[in-house]
Length: 305
Image 1 (tube, rainbow, N blue to C red):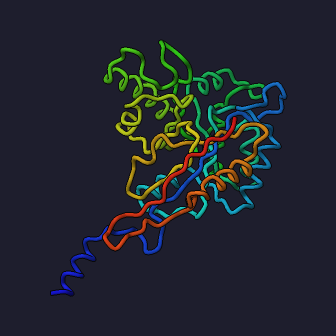
Image 2 (image 1 turned 45 degrees about the horizontal axis):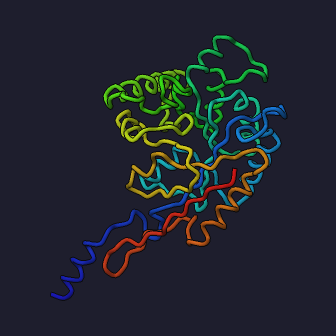
Image 3 (image 1 turned 180 degrees about the vertical axis):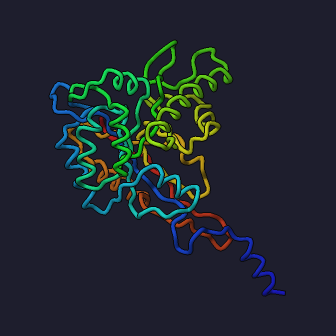
């Protein structure tokens, strides 16, 4: 009887997906925008090509392993293991520099990254047909070339919501706009870009990147109804992803990478910040003798801007 009771107690304990494998992983995500050589533009949202090259060289040789959104989604939804120190590099807005500078550098260093494009400007500049470096955004042929590299994952940054219009910023719900109208408006815009990207590269994005990081209380719920598996916000924090918890993939935090503060410095500060609470590493969800889950607390890192 004692043996039977022990066996039943063992069967009642939560089951992990792999023996000794981490069930939760802390993942920092870095946020980039434009890459250019114009001193007048360099600053919080623009870095030089040489700065980007140093970041990619550091990551290629460091203990960190760059991954993309597909890897995070596969970990959470399917239990596909992540490397011990994953990091995601995201590039917002689909600037021309993604093709001119980013593509050659990721090919050189073999570092995968995420590029979130805006549909309306991509359509407009493709029609205009310019290809010089003053061209502000990528064209569809350039998007296709980037995707074909196998190192640049294309994601959805809205078709035409990267603006402030009718009292709403980005994907925010407008004042006095009912939930149904908001959901329909968001669906129409995002679905249009999903279709355009599917037509151009053969696959639809899995992730929505909020313009300006602006969102409303029901935004992620609308995204889930549209079939998105993840979303990227702009809050400066490290993300804890847990197998079997799909909600943890939404409104993921990111640290901006401005001019003058390289990836090595940002990640080093994260390491120091999280070391005080014992996090910033893959960790197996421990089981106490009573079957309770013992989780590592999540620290919030807010870099000086």
